[in-house]
Image (cartoon, rainbow, N blue to C red; front, side, top):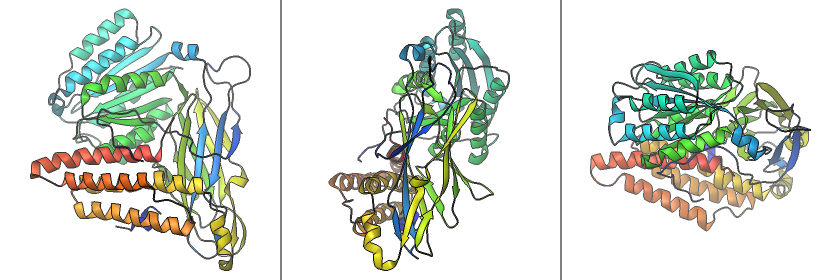
Length: 481
């Protein structure tokens, strides 16, 4: 394993009742750039609202000939929508429900049914609802139907009749949803919710292939979100599906709160501003993207980078850090590359480049190192290390817990603590705070607890800790407001 100094250059435990996850939280200020766009549906009379983007580098000077890690802080500010319009906005809701045999344990199916029933009760007459369940294969119980009172009663009866048995063919469920959208000409907000408690063990099982199905649903205008139930599902897979579907991932061990998660999804679908967004970067020679807030990074054949940054909800900020690595051979001015935000509103595509100034740096000779250190923006530097890099470390820690590798888990925390101290000294920035130390102590305690007790108990505790820490990693890297 790479050391954390090369692998990744708040105190918040995963919530066992399940939390909605979507990206946001402006933690830095910077140059705000107006994104021009056409009139989005329900944007109201007069000029359409505008999206803004803020971009800020962790430093603007680097030392010649030395490998350097830079952090680009990105904030996307999404305009608000009229509250009455949002309340009246029609939604197409497609629920893909796991009905495999494992759903019969721990009251999972009764809780899932109750949550879907609750969603039905919250639908407006103008909304539409479709229900798919999957085990060894998927069943389309109903295509998109208008959610009037009579239809809601019929749909409720369909939900009640689902019985768990068989394997877990997530891919067939996603393909069934694609079939529904192929037959639909909806111009409304489209939400696909996948609920599962297990691993993909039937049909398509490769995470990359399943992720592409979620991406295809998004290209049809749908936002795909996933909810993991219990402790046996694959959190990495469900996160990947949500990322490629431009939605969010949530999990619950205590399923009593499942109805709240689904209700929140429905409410947010009425606030959907853009069904997808991405950052496209044409990098200068020698500049690499190491990470982008945990969002999927696609490296294109022409050397450019696409970062899938998800849906945009009205009146929210989306915040993430892009980690760059480079070495500059000659002193002088250097432009890191061209970048633009791409997003889709009601089937229309919009884009806006970041300013050249946001990605402009100076390369100084080694004897001018103090100038490079003085150019560090302590706000961006601290956010990058104490939020983004902490999240990256937690993703790795979660992996070692899932695999039962205690030594690697302990080493991961230890190396991050050492890397933070080194970064603090190198950047002349007060990074190791009491809150961070407390968080690291808590993570070490979780690791010790996960590997204590009898073997069977350890397995349960490791699963719990892995999911909690994995979810916390996402929150650290993509906080929202």
